[in-house]
Image 1 (cartoon, each protein chain N blue to C red):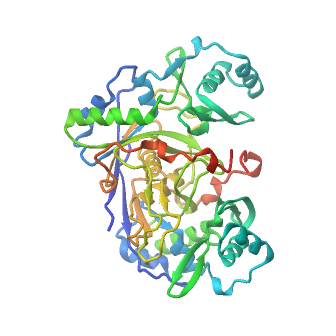
Image 2 (tube, rainbow over the protein chains, first blue to last red):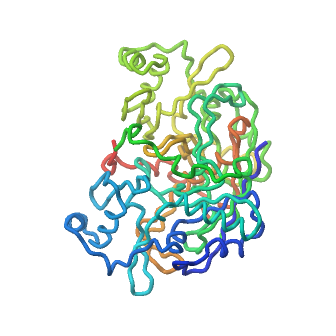
Length: 249
Length: 249
C-alpha cells in the first residue's frame, strides 16, 4: 500500500518584495513541516530575490527590436527575454522558445510580466533555482528545527500538447528522478525504461491544489516521505537532457 | 482558499484480462465515488479491452526488420509499434518517437512489453481512450448511482527533460484544460497565456500516489469537484496540438 498523498495550498502576503524572508513567511503559516515537500511558485522566490527588471530601465538592442516588430510585442520585454536566454530554440509567430542560462527550455525564458501599480516589471526566473531551494530549506530548518524538502516551480508549455503544466526548476531535499530501471514491478517484470520525474509530478500536483486567483504560491505536500533525503541532493538540474540527447532542438 | 487535494491508490487483481469489468472491480474497492476523479493506468484498460498482441503472432515486414536491426530491438515489437503509428516523428539511437492513430506523440507509440508466463505480449494503447473513459464512467454511475470523472493515463517522456511523467490519454467528466486566458489573478493582472492542462496535472499527481511495484493501477483523487462536469466533455483529445501549431516535428 502506498501512502495517501495530500496537498494543501497556503496563502502568502500579496506583495512579496526583494529581501522578504520567504522561509519565515512560510514557517509562520504552515504548521509542522517534518516530512513535507514545500512547493513554491517561482514568482515569489524571484521577487524575494530581486530577480525582476523594471521595463522602463531596459535598453533595447537591434535584435530585440527586430523580433518585437515581427512578433508585435513589447521590445523591452523581448530584450529581457534575450538577456535571460543562452539560445533561442524557436522564433515563430508570437512565440520565443528559449534555453535559459540555467538550461531550461521554455517559452520566453520563463519571463513573466507583472504590473506593480503603474510600473511594468518583468519577473525573471531565480538566478539559480536549486540554490534558492537549498536556501529556503535551510531557513525552514533553522526556524522550525524540522527537515522539509523544497521545490521551486514554473509553468511550462509542451511541444505537442496544449496548455501548461508546472514543472520543477529548483529542488532540495528530494531527488528529481526515481529510477526503477532494472527493478521489477508487481508482476515481476523488469522495468527497462521506468525513470520517474517525481519532482515534475510534484510540481504538477501542487498547481492542481490551488486556484490561479487564490494568491496561494505555496503548496504543502504530505505523503512523499519515502522520497525525502537528509542531504539537499543534485536538485532540478538532474532533469535536464544534455544537448547530445536532444532530438528536437 | 482552495480545497485540500487528496489521492489514494487502489490495488486491483494482478491479472486483468480481456472482458474483465473494470468498473465493477473499481466500484467494489473504492468506497463512495461522488465528486472523485478516478485515474486509471492505461495498461489495465488496454488488457480489459483486449488491446494486446501476442508477439508470436506478429508478421514482421521489411521496414520493421530494417529498423529493428539498426536499433538492436525485437523486430516483432518494432512491427507492432509501426502498426500503432500514423507517423514516425524521430528514429534515432534506440528511440522511436511516434504519432499514434489517436494523435499522441510519444515513444514507441505507447506500446509496452508484458510477460504473461512464457508468452511475450505487447500491451497497446486503448483504441480510443476517451471512449474507454466514458464507458468506465457510465459503468461506475450504473453500479453506484454516483457521478465520478474518469481519467486514463500513460507515462510519456519529454523532449527536453529526463524521466517520464504520466499524462492524460483518455478523459470523461472533466475538461482537460482550465482556461484562465483573459481572467485576472489575485493581484488583478490579466492572465494572457494561462491555460492549465489540469488533466495532465491530475495524471502526474496520480502516479506520485503509488509505488511502481505496488500493483495499484487506480488512484482516487478528491478535491477537484470544482472541475467536474455532468457531461463527459471533449476528453483528452482537446490536449492535442494541431499540426499547424507544431514547432518541433
